[in-house]
Image 1 (tube, rainbow, N blue to C red):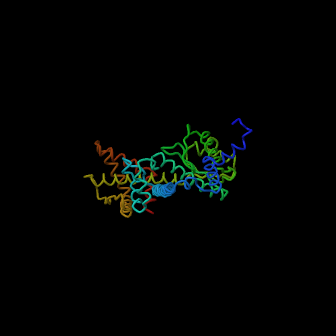
Image 2: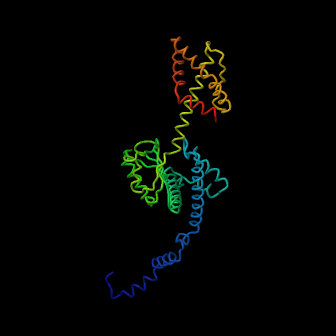
Image 3: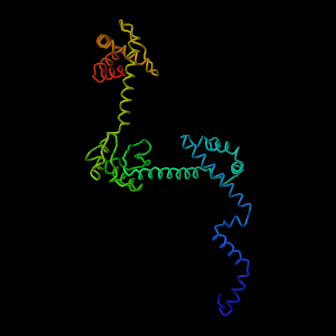
Length: 321
């Protein structure tokens, strides 16, 4: 525009144009908080409402499957739990039923599902972290998993190395990410690995920055080790009883069959082994020295196990429970 001597005339004519009126109406509607699309088309409003209802049902279905720890996908998308659940919900929600009939933009692709689940996980983490910050003081617990190098209370994190220095850097980064003050850390719990439980070369160096961060060996890890030892012990006792009962050279020992599912019967078997312990030692020693076949090798192996203090102690412990 160059003819500024005719500017007032041009401005007056522009105010009467359709473009100016449409722009003015759009700005006025935006200032009032109204959606421009809703003013232009009633069908657009209906589509927006349908999309909103459908999105809410999609999110609630994902939330249900995640809370129940059920898989979302199947061998095919049509047979997946997520799609089948949406079809069940669509029987009571006409908007969702019409939405699923669309050929595109249905918001149920793998990428959209992962994005919604990520947003949900962030919301859960934010609420958990908020409750921790409200409590002021907190404790640390970390362990490694098979799919992620490091598992922390706030999620899983991959690390290039698993040495103490790398884990310590990751730990401080996580605390900074969730806005946790390390001075409020009053406890730390790891397993017995040296890279985490070591005083000087492990993660227990947190105590150097916060002396009140008391280290406690992970009781869940300790319980897991105990359970594994008990399972190995019961397996050995079961094999011993089967071997003795099938032996043609067994004496007057009465060993009750071992039941792997009912504890009351397991106790009966253990008590029969306990009452015949000395006889078992003598019997297995004779078989191991006289029989050069596989039976003698088994007897020698069982004899070695029964002569260990851990075996006798575990037997007495389980019998007294």
